[in-house]
Image (cartoon, rainbow, N blue to C red; front, side, top):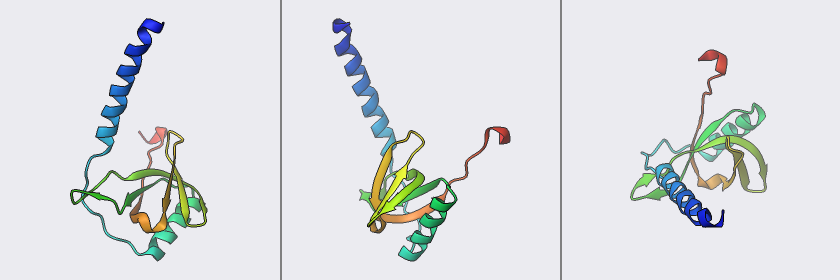
Length: 111
């Protein structure tokens, strides 16, 4: 097992790097929403347990990174906690958000 451990770690590391590069694609800017509208959308998503896509105000080379997709887990002070389908939690602040959209999810019986 020790012999193969290095090989597995290298292969795993390459896969993680590949996934990271795919997730850091660049996107066009979406409409800048007001803080009031962002607050309302976050509150509704939290209360109704709706999946949302958040575009952050973070640019690279004039383009935006992929949306943060998940459910609003909760709020504390100025922080908003978003959990994705893999149960990973992301923390962001209200002023970091550019746009929020509700993501429609298909049920297995709608396919």
